[in-house]
Image (cartoon, rainbow, N blue to C red; front, side, top):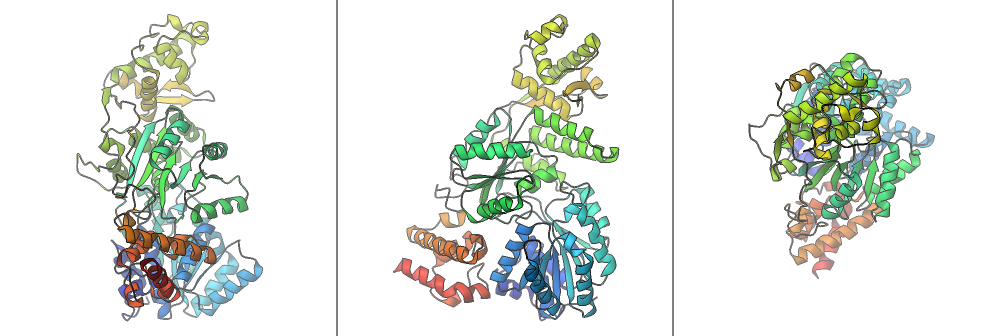
Length: 628
C-alpha cells in the first residue's frame, strides 16, 4: 500500500489552502489514515466538516504524485458549489455532469487524463459508466488514481431513508481498483444502514470514525397539528422574519400550494420538487443559495448536499418517514454554528398516512417490519415527554445519562404536563370493539370521537351507534385530547388503520391495554411560548446579525457591513454563493481585528494563501476606507 511522504504536513496544508489553524474532532485522525492509504467509513453530522476529511488527503496525495481523487456525489448543485469553493481556494477541481456540453465534458476529461486535476466530482452512474471506467483504468496503470471519496454513502442502503439504486454499482470500485483507498461519508446512519454501507461497498476492513451526532445549536420543537398554516405563520413571524429556511411537505401539490400561500403572506417563498422542470429547480435552488431570506418549500427531493451555512430554520408540515430522514433534513439548519430551529407540526392524519403507506407498499415483509419500527421510533420522539435531543441521539447509539436535559428543546425549556390516558385508551378500544360487534365493520377516527363524546350526528343515528354502551362515555375529554389518545395508540401499535377509508381496528396488543396491563401516559397539547428574538446568544437583539458579529462595537459593525457588501459584489462577479468567498465568521474576525497588512490578514481563520493573494489588498482597502 502506498504511503504519503511525511513532508506533507496536514496542519500546514489545512492553513495554507483553507486558512484554518487546526482540525476539529476526528478530522486529523481521518486525514492521517486516508493520507496513508487506508479505507475509512466516516459518520459525521451535517456541518461537522466531512468534506475536509477527503479534500486534505486528496491534495496531499496529489502533491506527492499519487494522482486524482474521484468524488462520488449524487447532486449537481453540490458538485458545482464544492468545485467553486476548491477553485477559490486554489485547488484544481472539476465536475462531470449533465450541465456540461460535449466540448466542456471533453475539456474536463483531458484535464483528468493529464493528471493536473486534484479532484473530480461525478455522479455514481457516471463513475460506473464503461467509458469513464476506461479512463480510470488508464490513470491506474500510470499510478495516477489516488482516492475514491463516496459522499452521501447512506444512499447505498435499502434500509436507509434515501436509497438510490445507482449507488449499488459502486461495489465494483473495490473489485476493480483494490489498491486505491476509499472513504465513504454520511451524516446519518443507524445500525442497519451502517452495516449495509459496509457490506455493499465492501468496506469490511475499513476503519470506522463515528463523531457525535449532537447539533447543540439546533433547537428541536414538535407541536400538535392544529391549523398547520396558522402555526407555521406564527413561528415565522415570531422567530424568523427575514431568515432563510426550508419548509418540508410530503406532496408536490402541498409544496406548490404552501409556497404560493407564503408568497401571498409577504415571504420570498419558492417551490421545489421533482415535478418541476429541471431548469426551474435549478433557478430556485440558485436563488436560495445566493439570496438572503429565501424560504424554500420542498419535498425531500431538495436539500441533500446543500452547503448553505445560514439556514436559520427547517420546518416540517408533515411527518417524515423516520428519524434518519428527520435528522438529515433538520441538520440543514445552522451549519454555521449559529442558533437555528428544527420545528415540526404533526397530527393523527400524519400517523395514519405513514402507516398506510408502509402497509400498502409492495415491499417484502421484513422491510415493512423495519420501516414500521423506524416510524415508531420517530413517533416516540414526537410524543416524548423527556428531552428530545436525548431520544434523538439514543437512536444513533449515543447514550446520555438518565435525566439528561439539553436545555435547547421544547420539552426541556417548557416541560410538558402529563396525564394518565390509560382509562381513556381503554374506552376508545372498547368502542372500536363495539363497532365490530354491532355492524361487523370499522369506522374512522372522526366518527369514533363523535361516539365517545356523545355527539349526535346523522351517521351516529343512522348506524344506531347512539344505542351503544360506549356512546358518550368520553364526554369529559376534548376532541383534541381524543385525537392524541388515538394517535398514541396507533403509534404504539395497539390500533391499526385499514383500507381506503382509514378505518380503525384492534391489534393483538390491544387486549393488554383493555385489561389495564399497559399504562398510556400522554402530554397535554399546547403551543410553545414564542421565544424573544435575540435571546439565544446572538447578543445584539438583531436577528440579521450573526453571533460572531453581534459582539462587535459600532466601528466593528460598520466594517462588517462594508465587508459583506464587498463580498456580495465578488460573489456576483464570480457567480458563486457569498459564503464560498468568505463565511460570516471570517468577515466578523476581520471586522474585529481590522488587520492593516497582508501578514496580519493571513492570520484570520478562513483566509488561505490563494484567497489572500486574490482578495487581500481589496479587503485591506475596504477596511481602510471604513476606518479613515
